[in-house]
Length: 284
Image 1 (cartoon, rainbow, N blue to C red):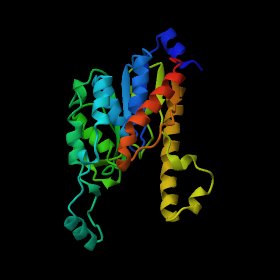
Image 2 (image 1 turned 135 degrees about the vertical axis):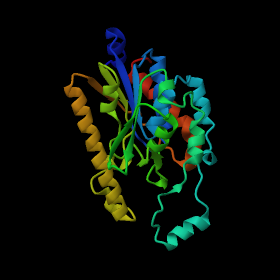
Image 3 (image 1 turned 30 degrees about the horizontal axis):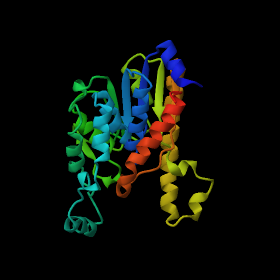
Image 4 (image 1 turned 120 degrees about the vertical axis):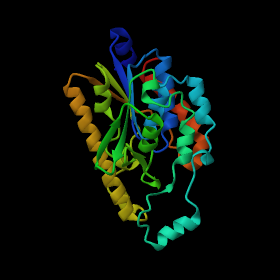
């Protein structure tokens, strides 16, 4: 399908959702660059986890060069703020009772202060960010108030980051309750098309029973089970939005994965996603 021709020719109302994906913000930003180069002007954005960061960048009106500068200059120490080892050992002696994560998340919050907006209300375009509300055991959707806190919560990967506290509730990774907040995006405004830049969970795409060949197999079984559950939750959201007459188009760009110790490959992931998206959008 020629997505770009469909969008440009009919002038539909388009919204973009960025899925969760471990350190996938480089690929998301490359996709966003391609969207802008194609002339598509989204009416709203939504994101989960790493996708929440780029959704906020887009909604707040950050330019493509500004996004590139922020991401390409990212270093591990910019967000890596673990508790001191004496504190970790103290929690270990208490069998980690009350211990909520390795990284405090304060450095991550300071990093997010470089965004063009501090609140949802300051954004140029409607924005929805998802998180997992551990206190009330539900998905949380944020569309107003403190933008930095919402992104911090959405990006707080369990075990790695300590949950963020919002209105008394402990909130973590938005990708846990669903890969992308598609329904939340559709509720922001009347849309004809929802474009989803989707980063698949790697173990969901592996061959059957491949987890049995890995060390620490029980951990891989649990991890796979969680990813299956959130994939199914996401698919149900997509079906629900489609049942309301909205055309949902999922785009995958297969950019190389990035991790905290492989940030140097971020530009490569950005460029790969941008090139793939331009081809999909029929711009090249």
